[in-house]
Structures are given as C-alpha cells and as structure tokens.
Length: 339
Image (cartoon, rainbow, N blue to C red; front, side):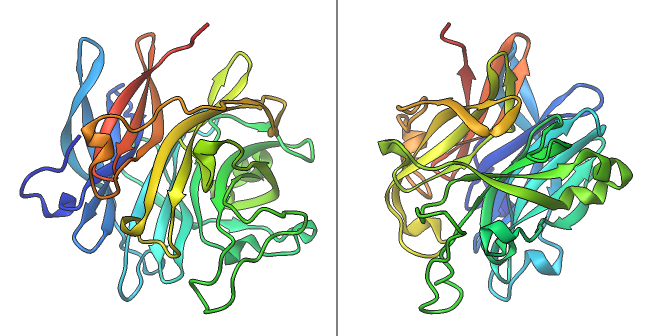
C-alpha cells in the first residue's frame, strides 16, 4: 500500500497497519494514514489477493480519527500505529493504539465485533504497583498489543495480557526532569513490558480491559540491532514452543522528543519466544535480525531505513507479516519456519 495521489489524508504516508477479518472472512488492513502536520487516522482497506498472496488494497474509509479531546493537543493530534487482536473468548477485535494528545503518546483501546465499527474504551490505566515505586501512567507509552487468548497471570489468575513499551525520560515534559526509572530497573532504554487484566473482571465488563495490573519487565535491548530500544510488533503468535513475538529493534542516533523525522536510525525486526505458562519469561531470542531494510521502499521515506512489523495473518497455509516501510508505505513478507 502506498499513499494515494490526491488524497489529503495520506499525504505524509501510509504505514504500520493492523489487520483483521470481517465476519464474511475478508482480510482487511487498518493502516495508519498520515495527513499534513503529522495528523494520523486509522484507515480501513480490504486486502486484494493474487493466487493467495496479498498484493494490494481497496480503500473503504476511516475506522478511527482523533476526535476525542485526549487524542488532540493544541498543536498536535493523532490516533497512531494500531495493533488489532482477535480474541475469540470475547468475540471481539481489540485495538490498541497510540493517542497523540496533550501529554504526548499514550496507549488507548477500542473494540469491535465486525472490524468495521469501533467503540472506544478510553486510555489505558496502569494500576499503581508499590514494588515499582512509580506510576506507569506518568510516562509516554507505545507498542501496546494484546495476546489472543488468556494466559496465566503472575498471581495465577487467568488473565488477558498486554505487551507495551514505557519511555522513562520526562525531560520533554518539564526541562531538567530527566529519566525516572522504576525500582530495580537500572537500564533507561525502552524495553518490552507486560501487564494483565483478569479474565473474570473482563467477563463482568469489557471496559475492565483498560485496567491493567501486575506489571512486569519482559525483555530489554540485548543485541547490536537493538542498541537503542525494542518494542513489540504484531499480536503474539502461538507456536508449539510457546508464544512467538516479532519485535522491532532500533540502532543509531535518536534525539529527544517524538518527531521521527529527526532520527538517524535503523529499524530491524527480531523475534522472541515467550513461555506459554509464564509470558514474562523469554525462552529464546534472535541475536541477529530476521528482517532488515534492504529495498528502496524500506530505505527511503519519511524516516529512512525502517521495517516496522505490526501484523501477522495466515492466508491458506502461509503466514504473512505486514509492516511499515520507511514510515511511508506498507509491505508484506512471508514468514516461514526454518525447521
């Protein structure tokens, strides 16, 4: 998918899509559409298949726009980088997205039964956890995505789990404030965390999905391609060995603030394998990236040298990964097991 000529809503790019199926089985992209001034919306586009391979899209409108006050600042607005997880036990698609509001990027949630119309549940709320000696709600946060089925929580209670990536530097908000790390965290680089919502609470009221607890650090940057930060990508995929998490790793130079056009970075994709009985535990991870910027579409764009996976779908017997290309376009890659 590339920006449509003459479409003002896409003038600064189409990127980082979620995916899902409508009740009739059709596969859709929910891409981030960027208008002038870096104002983002979540679009809706039906995927066109050629011999079972995704090759294009047919646009069908807007799924979500920054219409709410907490999705807008005086000089900014956006609903960005959606991830959509179909949760069969809920009979709902759950969309996590970044609301770019008055206090920067904050994660938010919307749900849908048909993928076409969405109900906002509001900004996510992280329950205070004394052991962390901080309030996770203070911090900008991105790359939130839910697992597709309940998993054991740290307290043993069946729970819906969500990966996310807090950012600890508050210097953007108040000059000199700097980095505030949770207790027992010594590395200020953004890493992957997980938080939980008990199944019993969500069955009582789906709005309890926004109330998350039992926050745990899952993974930090470890290898050269992850030098600056890591973040979760598509919804975790259940495989025989556990949960497969495709993630992005970033290296290079990243100035302060949230303007991606100031970055001199390389985004590549790696993979984590999480324990099915304890998703806070990493069983294995890739020391080298599995997808790197190589094509012109991946190397040249709003932010060059970026591959940013955000969705996985199975078409027939094949898994396809949909990803942002240089913050400008959307590509697809085939995901195969090597053994």
